[in-house]
Amino acid sequence: MRIGRWSNLIARTPGHDSELSPGWVSLTKQAGWGWSGRPEARVPLPTNGSATAYGEQQLSLFDQADDDTPAEPQWVEVDASRVRVENCRKFGGPWLALEVARRLHLDEFLQGVMPSGQEHVAWWRSALILVVARLCHPSSELYLSEQWYPKSALPQLLGVPADRVDDNRLYRTLDQLLPHKEKLEIHLKNRMGQLFDLKYDLLMYDITSTYFEGQANFDLAQRGYSRDQRSDCKQVCIGLVVSRCGMPLGYEVFAGNTADVTTVEHIVETMEKRYGKSNRIWVMDRGMVSEANIDFLREGGRRYIVGTPKSMLKTSEAELLKDDWNTIRDGLEVKLCARPREDGNASESDEEPEMFILCCSRDRSNKEEAIVQRAEQKIEERLVAMTDRCKRQRRDPMKVEREIGRLLGQNTRATKLFDVTVEKAEEGHARIEWKKIEASRDWATLSAGCYILRTNVTDWSDEELWKAYIQLTEAEAAFCIQKSDLKIRPIWHRKEDRVLAHIFVCFLAYVLWKTLGQMCQQAGLGDEPRRVLKELGDLEIMDVVLPTRGGIDIRRRCLSKPTDHQQIFLDRLKLRLPKINQTQM
Picture 1 (cartoon, rainbow, N blue to C red):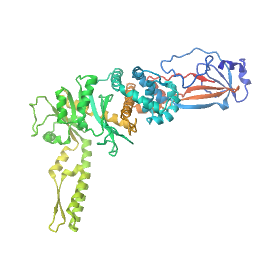
Picture 2 (cartoon, rainbow, N blue to C red):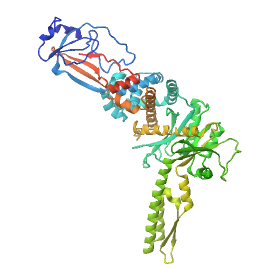
Picture 3 (tube, rainbow, N blue to C red):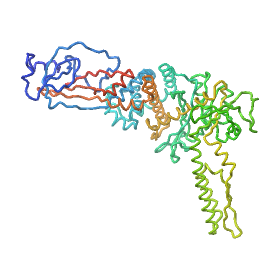
Picture 4 (cartoon, rainbow, N blue to C red):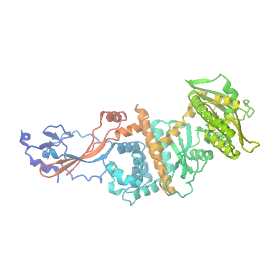
């Protein structure tokens, strides 16, 4: 029934409002409405067409023109005491995620590579559901379909009814999405470069691991070194490549028992095949470094800045004692030196020049000295007690050796500072002889807070090289966000392809996260995607129910008004909330 028919309930005569019965107010059709607390309020009511079928029709969210054409008033009586709000759903987070995806042309790309068939819900829409949910409320596919999705505004934003989304459909969507990984990574890299004028001259590479709960009986799932302190669980390793500002370029998944150093050649060749060789500089930490990898990078004419093992500092002991350091900031000094030979002298006759960057941090020095001193004190106190005990008791030398081994193993930072021997006395009991090694103590003091970098980039200053290496923290931050905010771990999937697709969805959600961060930086809000998601995520969509005298309920779908703080975010990001104009009887 059209709402226009109810305009006859009240004659449009002067002074009519004063004749209304108590508890009833009149409403009139206007361009906008708001509750004022007065006997008369105004609401836009449709005068043509049928009621909107919520969930069956996608909201028009973007580029919606304003309609300021004055409407002819039409009056109905509403019982103010029975006005209520129903179906409150989270709107801000899903809407913001879809807006970011639209700027990346993610929806258009997915629609192009995942064409619709005979399925009830297009695969590209289901893929967007997975990515948006991973960004806004990461959870399992079962929880997403049964709990989160029906309580969010995504059914209206995407035009997919809640009863059409279940865990099986989302699992099948993972299968459909995974084959497009490489093309999608290339598309996102190009699109992010266009949006933010990104440079890919510096590539940071790092690797992490994520573990499984439950069964994981396939080749990639193996036990290995766990960064999550879950050596009891099988895991996979993930190698991620990001730009200098942390924008992700791509990733690869390796078996859980893969050593970091064995992944370098595969990653470099994969990225070069995908994006071209160009004149990029690779930045990696010391876990990736081996002479074989250095030779591989040199042979291809590639440039690099890499960390080195702590043991290589010994070859630069003479440089550490000199006073020609360059102060970058208070408490941090660096300097360039030629690549040392094994005899400790500088080498200048190498076929390809290679430089070392010595770095010394005061804060790091204080921290390392405190750790060493604490471990040294524990070892010394325990050795004194054990020595006295051996003098008073007849102890088995083998048991004493095992105790000392455990003691040194628990305090490895100070192990080299002590020389400990267990001898067997004439009577057969153990006798401990120990002493401190002063030379090792002096070296620990000298090298505290120092580390050394290695590079074949000879046209940069020591400060530029150090700052480039420090950008490696962007890759580490990416892993932190994926494990905490996007909850990539633990993995519950049991099929290898589903595991790979789960990691891919987390990667896409991280791309949205970083894109929002770049939007915030351009808007002068800093790199605050977490805060923006939280603030705008409080926006809700709801149905306002207006009971009329004739027994008909007018159901008006509305969006909550942004707070002053939320409006500042929207204005700075140049985002405009959609006009939701749906009324049902």
